[in-house]
Image: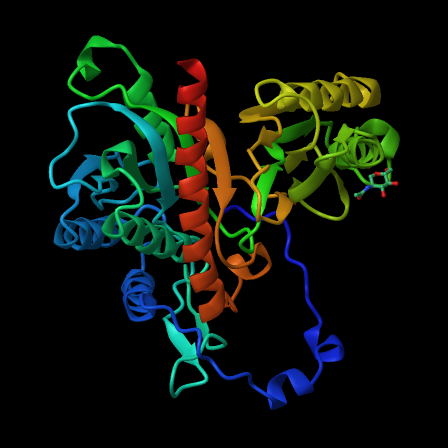
Length: 418
Ligand SMILES: *[C@@H]1O[C@H](CO)[C@@H](O)[C@H](O)[C@H]1NC(C)=O
């Protein structure tokens, strides 16, 4: 998950020491605890930074094969910064043979890449594992906790014969933390009808469950995003004679001030559109009127449709640039999308709204999307990324409930159709 901002939780002032002094006894250890922890550790132990996910994909291929699942690796072209590593999405089915159909009731998906730097797996405190044991390390939350919990939940439903395995497809993608290339490629190949892809299946899903840290709450959606660069063009000169030149920095700063003070759109569900001025560049020396300047922006879009929401925001920004100084200012934009709606009306789940981006908008097609997973985004890309055993186990139960809900709902729809 791509995080917007990191909040500091000042627990020391708020958490009661009594909570540490009197640990509750743990008689609630689920039968799958060891399998879950082993799988989670194996995944976190593999440093699968975006662009170098090969070992994680090969591990999953082997693991899923041992579970008697059908598995396929889908090669993904290395991106601009992809390095020389082979990259694969992992496609799997909880059936010994790959189903002949390409239509599934449910896709269960998450990503196997993580953000840098690699941080090793760690359990604390050491000693016997309880549900309060903290597991940390890069990817321990985002999103290997989701992947591990999804797999254990699915295996448990399959072995208790609570679901029909042929209804389900699994997908673990690469590159979510950078460009979303894994999901985009899967989507393109599944939905493109171009002749050179006719060997690949046109997968269709009724519903899809995406695993990302939502603190085991069901996300009602997340903000959209767009990013761009504002270029400012001036005229160089001696700083003692400002009338001889034109300061690109000054014009840029004026436009940024306006952008920050303009309502770029809001909605009840997603709050305000927010702007992060991530990089500012301009000028060459203190005593030279700057000839050029630029600002790189990431904007989290809170209003409009998924398809068009970002375009409305871009139009507002461009209007400000024109009003500030249409001759000096121009902009470039790198696509994006508006707010992404997910299904969150499921009994027994708390809900939330996320401010980060996910692969949800990268999966094309007509399906219902659900976004759910263990751990919190507030630590997800930080040095202290980690979660408790009970969060991980809570997610297994949550995924089970969600999978049963989604399949049950479709059965009801089908019966309604008869
Ligand atoms: C959204 O912006 C308005 C006005 O700029 C402000 O009053 C409000 O507190 C903001 N809402 C949130 C959730 O930040």
